[in-house]
Length: 288
Image (cartoon, rainbow, N blue to C red; front, top):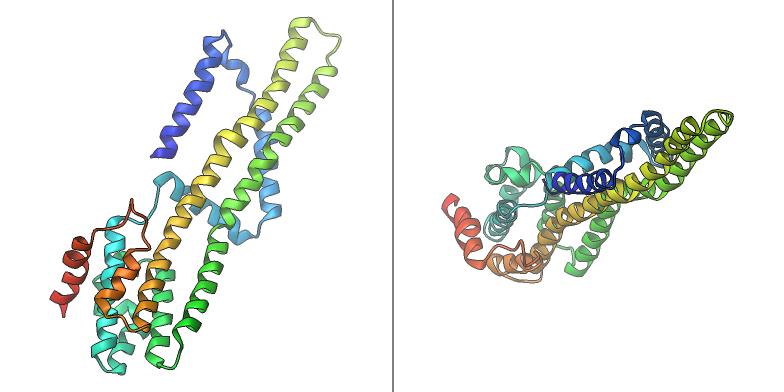
């Protein structure tokens, strides 16, 4: 919603200001300038990025439009799932716990937390490191280093679309100049025409410069920045899991380990300790 509101405000102010100065909005309607700039930008984006990044960029843009960041409920579900798993690890035989880890989609524990289960990558991350805990001979500092490395790889992959769109934004002003130059070339071919005709052609050419700069700094770059922010917030879920599991490996009780994970959530999004006790740990105790 924020992206849509921002776009409406931006377009309203730019076009409204232009019209208030006496400009005619129909002058800006140059479809072939948009074709040159937009088509070239998309083509360059496809050249510069692997197809997986191109496909992910569409998904990332939708995430930015919907502001798809982890909700309070998602954080509470993650903490509740971790608490249940750690209790199982502490009190149940190895084979019982392995049945939940090896088949998470059919596990009654995971099924209690559908928001986490829907996040396949996060679920796999949690299961992988729970297996290492079950094995029992992994050192906490080694597991922590491995987690850091994997989270770094996840961050790199998740931010590829943001970097790709930022590269597109960097190139759009130059593409606007390309479109403007082509428009001037066309205008020079009509140099023998009346000043009114020639002025219209030169004005149409300058629209390309405007479009390139506007798309770069008012559309693509803000969306790329928004994608980066949203993806970083979603990566925070992995840090919650990491800190909780490492605290448990270092000897903390499940409820204490959960506090290590809760503290990695930013103040604005962090559920209170009472919320965690009542909604996360409380749900797990009822299920047990």
